Length: 282
Ligand SMILES: Nc1ncnc2c1ncn2[C@@H]1O[C@H](COP(=O)(O)OP(=O)(O)OP(=O)(O)O)[C@@H](O)[C@H]1O
Ligand SMILES: [Mg+2]
Image 1 (tube, protein in one colour):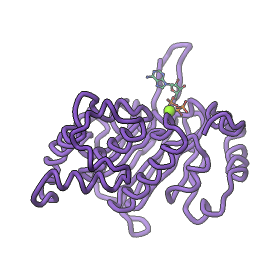
Image 2 (cartoon, helix red, strand yellow; image 1 turned 120 degrees about the vertical axis):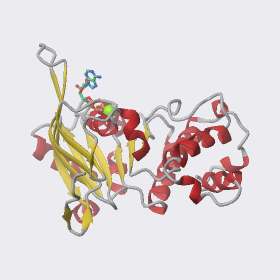
Image 3 (cartoon, helix red, strand yellow; image 1 turned 60 degrees about the vertical axis):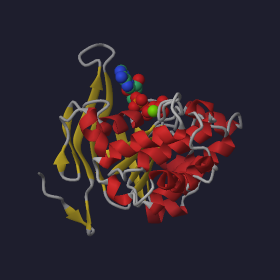
Image 4 (cartoon, protein in one colour; image 1 turned 90 degrees about the horizontal axis):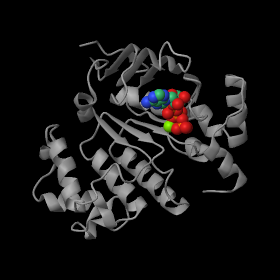
């Protein structure tokens, strides 16, 4: 096991060293999705990630979760080298949600059954110890944290819930067993503005209450600025900006766009960001 590197008094929980990911290598369609990614993520980090379409944001999350394997470089989680570990072997350490409310939960099962599944997965990680007494009571308590009244609906089939309610449940499930890292890939992007706001509030509350290390991709620049303690911008497979809390707190959206243009040498181009700017969506 690799020794943790200490810096600023905080051990590194996730470490990417010289990571590359290439799609269609050696063909005219070759895509360098990740180029020399070096990233240290520490306890207390809640990193928001923005960047143009195709910048490599989702690929970054996937090489961490094992959904894609890195072609070069090393990845460690809590000091353990997982570079060659398949996805299922990393799953115990990670919580993941993407933008599709249908993928994080099972539609035919009730809220309680969904939570029971997450609970069983977590039990291997010692979750059982945290649940003193009645499991149903515990589920009600964690659901109450979402503020959506889901705790009164344990027997409701998940397929009948709204997209926002399903994402809230997915969040509760992904965080039930205290993952070493929570990976969020535009998890509010498919929701209406009100539901998106609510899910972000729940996200922030859970991250804070459970001290979760979090990596959150968003195309919403306001969101990227107002949440988290660190903001990264990606462009053509590279991390072109990594802004710490003190500086992030002072930034406005126009200043952020200007910083991106200066760092990347091109304009920030994301279809959804542009639509939002024109007022076509939330
Ligand atoms: N499985 C794959 N096979 C081939 N190419 C892929 C695959 N996944 C991603 N890519 C390509 O890699 C590049 C990075 O894609 P990625 O999905 O990481 O971008 P992104 O920053 O998440 O973009 P978006 O904002 O549109 O979600 C893109 O050019 C994409 O087409
Ligand atoms: Mg993406």
